[in-house]
Image (tube, rainbow, N blue to C red):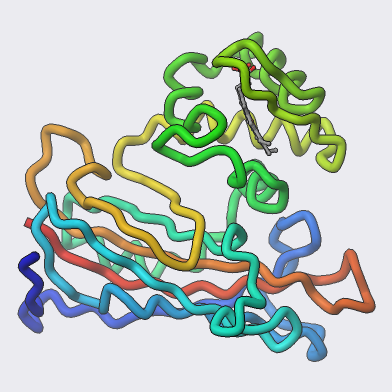
Length: 251
Ligand code: HEC
């Protein structure tokens, strides 16, 4: 694996953000109002900001999370499935700074519902797990009203026999509106070849697999995030999201 520092010319500072959301994951207010719940500190330990790779390298990543209320990932106190790495391909490096400064990007409601629920236990974004990937689902069902209604009903009530013999359980914890928003998000966004989401504190990806096939090089913004569970004795109250982003360059 070739791995060298990129010249200082492209150097981008790492960024960390804190988001304040209510329990269902929607943006509440940009100001931290409750002092008792402290925001999680999310850190991408690897790769390092401005690292350079070849497109077919296997990039190993590692994320740590420390939250005063929920615990620390180094003591296995954080549910790894709730930590998410978003990998975004950027073809035009001159857009990097603007994209990084535009953050923090709160999760749209549909994606917030997906994260708050257990979907990532069985679905990967791009590869098959126990359930079909969100990418495959978005290819099979164009985002029509009829498909949206059918899939919302299946996620809500559970489903089996469409993709195979595995069974998807019902999701009574999501309201009909949240379920519809989740399905809508999958049908609209999962088909984008330049984005992947990987759950977990560590793993591996090949940058070349997260980009349109006609492109040859570029930068990738890696954003790790974790939403805490608020105060234990005040369930349903404010949750805080910690976010950390680094940029890697590939040729
Ligand atoms: C316990 C595992 C499991 C969980 C949790 C789960 N799924 Fe599924 N999902 C599956 C399986 C298995 C299938 C394929 C079911 C079938 O063949 O009918 C599936 C299918 C789907 C489909 C396609 C349905 C169709 O008719 O083609 C969608 C959309 C979907 N899941 C979304 C979600 C969302 C959103 C969540 C979280 C709210 C979720 N899933 C949680 C296992 C799961």
